[in-house]
Length: 63
Image (cartoon, rainbow, N blue to C red; front, side, top):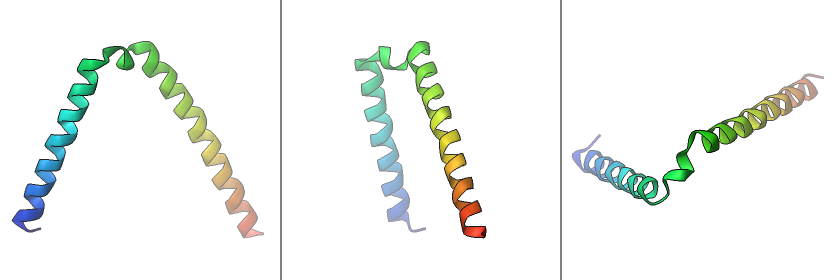
């Protein structure tokens, strides 16, 4: 990887970290234990539904 792309990746990661830092400082309640718990529960349900849907599609293709 050339030096330009390494520098660009480093600069991009610094910008992303800075934006996340500002967001957390401005709205710390977004990352409370209760909100994260709700988010992880929702993501778990969606992941299980997606796994089931993909399994259904695989069974449909095999027949």
